[in-house]
Length: 307
Length: 326
Ligand SMILES: Nc1ncnc2c1ncn2[C@@H]1O[C@H](COP(=O)(O)OP(=O)(O)OP(=O)(O)O)[C@@H](O)[C@H]1O
Ligand SMILES: [Mg+2]
Image (cartoon, rainbow over the protein chains, first blue to last red):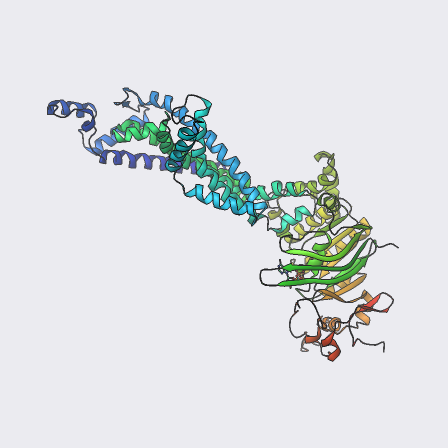
């Protein structure tokens, strides 16, 4: 198991490095950052000076090697736009995003599993069909659409919740629901299908024959044996939610990392984009490593194979 | 002696999208304490459906017990509320299934699977208290060095061991009745004999009654006291194991007997087999269910269904043209 974990972590580091590299070149493909920094008609000498200062005058491969060195020594750079160390910038913004993303993930997991379980138990009933239709809708509805619909309805018409900011607990409701909608739908659908499938196994009747009550049969045997795919899907939603944050934070003017990242990309604030991507890639990679490890933990047969 | 289980006029139908399958269509039988009753018949004749109906393990969505009484120690099980039924499953009546590999939850250890059935009927019991009893149980079902097996998962055991664990689960609360649905079909031939022998021993040790389901008359002959032969959802002949083997009266039973390979018989001699397959006839049934495959079938057989009549002490046959005592 430890050998497996180490291999998996090394692979993860490689993945993160690949993503960082791709993003490094991609942002530089979008053009010269000085375009946005200087006003029209600035003298060419001034522009040249600025380019030197930002190290964008050197050939790309040199820039890449320098950046990689900086990265490994923990020197992550400076945001021109915000006039701040990028680390400090993320120290402010990351908690804001987490405050939104973590409850959303939790909400998605709890409601997803609960809805999926109800649908599976009553499968082919009206409740099941409702869950199926609703989840398809939320699964396909893009976050920005749902966000805007919510603002129109709950902020502008009903005036229940503020449409922007993060001032009170009320500000959390709409962005959280928007962010959680997709994951809830996916998790519910997967839980339903996987539980319906598990419940056809003979060991389910074996458990019933022990005199175990139906609710315990569903939890201890049905859900327990459906857990691997469900946990995998929940873990994968971390990526979806981070991606969703970028959109949702912009729709609801939430001062988080997603908003920062979008603005930084627009303004070619390279250092900010690179660190943002690094944080996201690392988080998603760690989530995937944990998913892989959880399989061994949840299923004795996998544990045996890995040994 | 009083019957511990009485099943009367049991009808269980599967309702599929296209048709109704009367898998069990009027089955009666009784079981006395400590008796081993064999339920035999070809694949598809409704044996499993009988067993599952008795303990209420039917999928309510498409399966229905259309009628019938199932009296366990005088209590009606058909329609009993699920809470009381849970109290009977695993304690009053236990069941083991055909394929042990798919009947044990893959993610729990041997210990927790047995502990679960004890806990279900005795919420007070602690793991420490259960441990000793579980080790004893595993010993009784013939698992060598049981202490070392407690933390094994099902996939780490051989098929025979898995079936022994299933039996241990079934016996954990000293049930009055053990229903064994083809307990040896999925096992190696050598292991089959061991498991049958074990069941016979355990019947004496735990003083329980048993329903042994099998399509194999030889299996039934080796351990049963009494036999019900089923065909197409009904019992066609019921008798003590001696009568079934010495004076089978129903043409179907005779066919089954003739298809048992005899050890002394000439190798070149072809095995007898009954032509055709079990046919499920949709109700209402107006002929003998076996008439299409029966050599003795007459006009009468095609016009009405013969009743199950008692032809001797404890010997019942459902046939118009049965063998008379000769
Ligand atoms: N879920 C189901 N839906 C529809 N028909 C079914 C279903 N289960 C069983 N049947 C039908 O009911 C009849 C009896 O099935 P059952 O499983 O009780 O037979 P069996 O005697 O146990 O056979 P086997 O020896 O193969 O286990 C068969 O004709 C079968 O096709
Ligand atoms: Mg069967």
